[in-house]
Image (tube, rainbow, N blue to C red; front, side, top):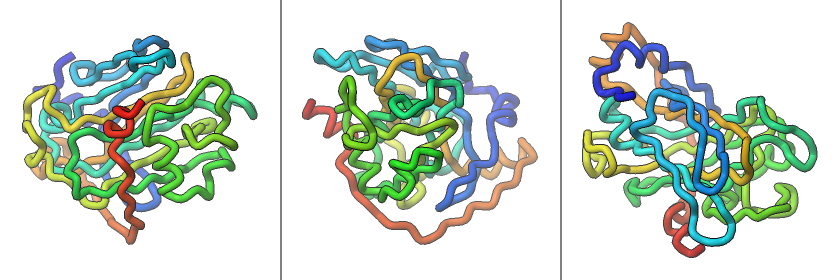
Amino acid sequence: MTVHTALGAIAALLVTFPVDASTGTAIDIGTFVNTGVGAIGYKGNFGDYVSSAKVAGPSQHTLISVDLGGLLTSLGVDAFLGVRITDTGLNTYGALSPGADVDLFGFDGLSPDIDLLYIYGGPNPVHQNETTEQLALRVGAIDTFSGAQDAWHQTHVSLGQEGSLTVLLSDPQDVIDFPGPGVAGVGPFLLMSEAGTSESFQVDVLAIPAPGTLVLLGLAAVFARSRRRRVRPEAATERSKQL
């Protein structure tokens, strides 16, 4: 489905995005399920901007890529603020399998001056008091393995039932400054990987819509920024190259 002229559909996709460090407007990108060996199940309105591939090697990890540049410019978005991954509540839950396991969560093509803040919110006590640096380390590379546990291995974040992991940019990035405004396939890209199979998660992109878009949709939003610790984890793609 193309979204270049789907203003009517945008109204249904914009919802309140409650996070600790910032509030704004979110775009519901859709629901993802890792079905293994490079394949995914996707339900949403942005299939033109979503792709997946098997990571080289014996791990059979699946890399999911979302073309944020093409997607956000097509929607008339002014600035990009961050992304949230949320467990759908439809997975297996227990001590050894606490929901969707986020193995990789980062970006390719953002300005090198942008720092990232990772925030966990959910029922998993392992991550509730972890710092942004610890969370960034967990999701900085595709490196989890069969039998890895969140309590002992720094390879992934187990979201827990309806838990979430949010990454916020230190400064809003103007979409007009993206490498190829309006051109699909140029980026920047959101990169994700879920460690298991058959576990689903939902993705929201936090953004500031253009004023004209807000007027057309009859929406109003208040954006608040609070103090935040800055961290510059290695870019997700750079770590992936080391695999």
